[in-house]
Image (cartoon, rainbow, N blue to C red; front, side, top):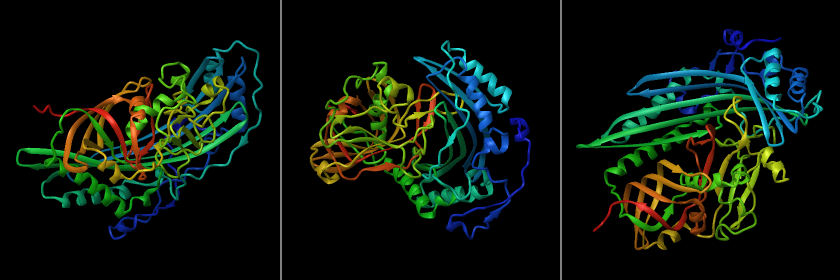
Amino acid sequence: MSIKRRDFLGTVAAGSAIITMPGFLSGCGVQTATAIATATPENPFMDWFGVDQSVVARVMSELTSRGADAADLYFQHSRNNSLTLEDGIVSSANSGIQQGVGVRVVIGEQTGYAFTEDLTLPSMLAAARTASAIASRSQAVAPQSFNPLASGDLYTTTVPWANIGVEQKLPVMKFVEQQAKSRDSAIEKVAVYWGDGDERVMIATLGGQLVTDHRPMARITVVVTAKKGDETQTGYSNIAAREEFSWFSEDRLSKMVDEAVDRTMIQFEARRPPAGEMPVILAAGASGILLHEAIGHGMEADFNRKGTSIYSDMIGKKVAEPFVTVVDQADIPRERGALNYDDEGNKAGRTVMVENGVLKSYLHDQISAKQYDLKPTGSGRRQSYQYAPMPRMSCTFMEDGPHTKDEIIAAVDHGIICETYTNGQVQIGAGDYTFYVKNGWLVEGGKVTAPIKDVNIIGNGPESLKRITMVANDARLDTGGWTCGKNGQSVPVSQGIPTVLVSKMTVGGENVS
């Protein structure tokens, strides 16, 4: 059977699915079993569109008919939904389906890439011919059969998000809104944002591997606005994971609300700190954004292969103190940045970039790995079938160090703690950065003395890495809905860090005479 995308979208399928509800909603009149749609098959490309191994082999043969060092087919079918609740009213609701295949052939330093959303054989062959136009070598031997690899189990779901309707999600959003409004009489407005996605991919490689992966995603965000007199403050919090509907428990949602309200209300007491160079403590969790942006990108192999990263000639050299270890690890169950396989069909896993202060490895896709005569690190990622992959981070974090948070605070005579961030700019490669700190704390005489807000911190990633003088034993990944942008492509990521002391950064606070 072969179905065009337009025909598929117009087909109404019948079926049923048992939905596991968060326990605290059991009394809200929400249905626990709903006939929504036929369950998405493990491989929708074969089951819905007739893209079996013989079809894949024909497209691969066409793609590599003029030569290839590497080649792959990346099939994607994803359903994404979003809701916005403001002042008790659903102000927007959006759903979308993205579907297609990207075909890539690599010859030396050249890459041919084309894509089509039409999964019929003629359209896929036409895309393959377009991509193969870069080639001028002898014909490559394309596989006529493929080895299907076992699906991973990092983020299995009982019911896919494609089968969860608005009537299930809205009570969760209203619960969050009600909880936030009840926290403080000064809270004037609450907005709740919901997003979920159900993505299926199939990847065929020139080496004869056939990978399938089901990638769920969910995120909820609460934004709180409070007013006291003429002063208005806003704060937010969110949680995200490759999880299913039942993950949104009362306890997890209440903690998110508490965090958003606390971040908002503390700003009425906070002030800007003095400006200048000073020690900066990066709080555990969300401060991983600095590790990701200012340091992690510089360790992606494409920047190093082109010589644009400051780490281009630093493999095997000291880049930090011996108690600093930086890891990118995709196989952490249910994390937003988790992956069973990367977008080139390679098994994703753990890459130690900095070990005991020494730069050990870059993050490699297949192209960069070949240039360095290494195996890929499972770091080839792409936004969708419309893009070619490149080296990207997944779940990036610094491991525990030998100190404690209290020891770090006690070691600072005059400095600040950075806790939450709203904006930042980074020059990838050189690593120069500016981050806007929404919430933080002033440290004086080894003690936390006052809340601070609206602070810019300025520095250089590689220099800041060298200036880390203490690392605590409280490392944690932040559960927020982080998304990484690079070369026009966005992918979900996770990041984290323990409490860390950087001996010197430039702090853009108030000038004190």
